[in-house]
Image (cartoon, rainbow, N blue to C red; front, side):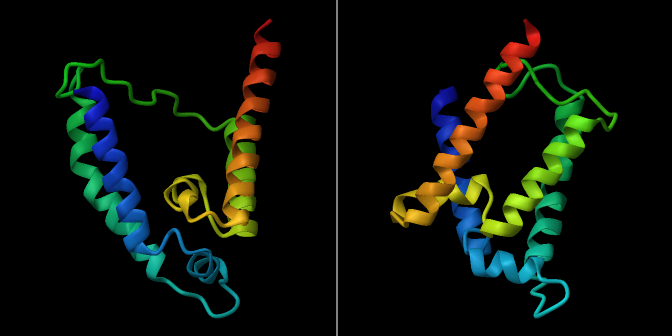
Length: 139
């Protein structure tokens, strides 16, 4: 049941990204172009997403287990550190250069565009590099 729920949640998320235009690099770059022809529509999408998530997240904070019985795993760390700031900057720079972020990249992966394939390959390589550095740091 857990895998089916995860699949359905991912499907709804991917469809939402496509319908909102977040999988369209031109639309994303228009949103990021504050000094030019700024397109504020993605800001409205983000605000709506926050609004929709507010109630379930508030509910989740009060529970120890999910509806399917799995332990609730919400972030507990609250302080800003170098890793969080550095990762956020790296994510933002990549988003600005490519006009796409990981969720939409996976959603449009099957289009076969070489740019998306290259983006996903670089993303996976970055994940592997991070894991290797984490293992090395731990010992």
